[in-house]
Length: 555
RNA sequence: GGGCUCGUAGCCUAGCUAGGAUAAGGCGGCAGCCUUCUAAGCUGCAGACCGCGGGUUCAAAUCCCGCCGGGCCCGCCA
Image (cartoon, rainbow, N blue to C red; front, top):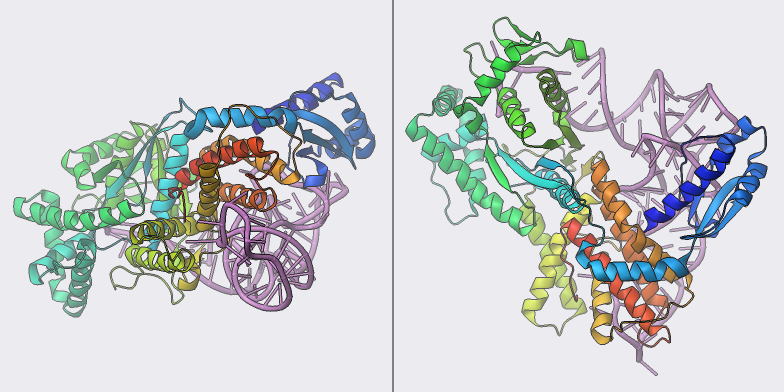
């Protein structure tokens, strides 16, 4: 309902300006508390045009405006026009809306189909914390967009045609796999061992390229070896994804685009444009679009390259919906080239969410050299740490409930610590930070939800209640609750899921403060406050589910 | 060498796309709050010339230019 308040304020400014024959885009901001709930600095911009000081102008404009609807009051202060929310009016409507819509509060509908590619880690080892950033951003965005009304399908692109998998296959022929290990970790072990032998004996390199060629041609035995290796690894990866609640709708194998001849069809289509050129190889000349680096599409022997297959994959995706790709920063150039290739073919271009790398204090991670922190380790450590906290705080709880809480808190903390940081920010991973359940982290939000649940357990929810005049803590909470739908569409439209993480903190913060200062059960405003708690619980749960974090009932 | 990106208190982050009022939080530090709905909570104090220099503007953390520092990309690899 906050959006309605904004629209009413906008309408009022528009109306008054129109009377003066002015039409302008109005920008609002949320000021600090003493200046109301919404504010516009429009008069600073108009002042030179109208030849009046902003202060006088603000007074004039505010004088012509009328409060009403969700606007209680309009006040000019130092050139700003400030709007005050009518809490008496908004509060009961909002609480009823949330109570009746429940987990649909804030939901949008009727938006387009989205094909969202994320995670897509090579099947040569377990997911490490860098892949986790990709998957968590992708999964959270998928949840947010789905809630905002998009029809989202998430896809994991399996790179089965890379050299890495060939090395694994080669390694599997030489070394015995450790069947006691988690499958993706066992594959990683083979990969690291094989890489080492190959580095020491360069003469084996030809065997690798031989394997790759055989797989590309689809030689039966080799094909099943590759598929076995990739699936073996993916089994392990899937287990981890399930644990951290990253949902993949479809797994798409890179080789399938070669086998069904989409790759050659894509090359054919590109051949009909003026951009496809040939010397020893086929390549795209994108200099017209400001990309000087030509994009090479085939080897001298005519076989396709990774990008060629990726173009075919994107053509297929584009035919099914709007494409959104979650890519690491190293893919920036490729993503531009890919996008241009699609543009040349007259296909709707994909959108990219680019995130910076997570590195270790000592430098980059490397699956090949076995230098990485796996997501499994991180989740284990996090859950273990959470269990220690539960034991400390709730020693008498039964063990299975303790374990359940610890797992939810541990997974939630990992997801939250990643998603709360804007994707363009590089991260240096440090154990102390990753495992520190900071005050304003996911336990903080889960705890707010748990607190709300415990109050509701003990309270009777009456059908009717009187809305009293609100304290500032209550107002703040009501306002934050009313902003949830605005934040959802903001996060979905800008494809920036970390907006929801920030909102979650703001909401939990408002709730904890309310909890501290406004007793519910022993208050003469009890009936109202119980409803406020109910609404808070619903919105907290909705927010947590967008973040992929369990809304715990107790902890 | 060319291109992209990040730089906000001792440490970590929000705000930057659409420039506006005292730069908002957390960690760490100091001082407090549990016979009252779970203290994974709350309150107070100290701590920032928003990397540096210029420009545009009535107004710049935010836009533009230059510089410095970190990261990434520029394969007939994936």
